[in-house]
Image (tube, rainbow, N blue to C red):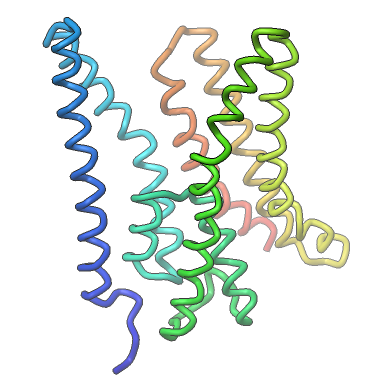
Length: 245
């Protein structure tokens, strides 16, 4: 029997897991609603909070749908759907899948079909690698948060510098992936310039959203700045690729 990355059994397995996650979400939503009533929050305010949260959940959901579509070219729909519905992000999942395929002599985005063993390898790399972060949360984060609070109490300025430094360090790890093929430009291969230009377009769009909010007071644009820059940035890859040949 030939392996299929979009096999119905995979959809069934993933559907069960996603349903369990949605069940947890509904459970805690009900618990939070009841707790709000207990502490004296009016139902009208709770309804407003719930409706506002539901509306602004659409924004990151757009980015997730695009991520699933991006990964589905090589991996089918079930695996990206699972990864991005439970824990995962486009940046991490793409790098993990690309590295796994590269190790097997494949090129991400140009794979017509995966064998069962190749599919399991990619799924293992995407899944097991991110477990470290989950394990570190109960072991490290409480002590780290306590240390940050203590540092902020002693010197708020240095606490902000430390927090921003950690964030910049995380971003730098992904920037390496963007610039890793840039030197190919000097040998006549312009492909490495594409992700750099796409990142530049996304950054300009993000700055534009910030400028619009500052000038016109559009608070809503802050919630949609990420999907706007992500969608239009990815769309810009098409004309950029065409221009670079």
